[in-house]
Image (cartoon, rainbow, N blue to C red):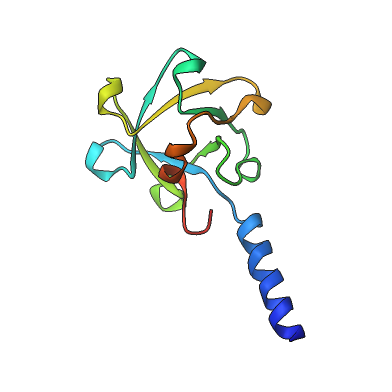
Length: 116
């Protein structure tokens, strides 16, 4: 029983400590997991995103994104579209970390990864 509890605790802690929201910007639409449109207005966004300066700051699925240089490092591959109606997800970039987060929770599953 102790082994089962310890194993469960380790699995849960691994999920929460896993690095999330490392994002790679694709050159082609067909390579992307999610098509993203950037709006100039916070109230139009599904997700308010804060660009992290360091990889370890980007965790979970809370709008804290770290842009990686190589596709293999990313948890999600995105493509920026020019028109809102082409997008799966509408985001707004904020300058303040505490403003990041989901405004439309129905779209949250778009950025979920197996390891979070």
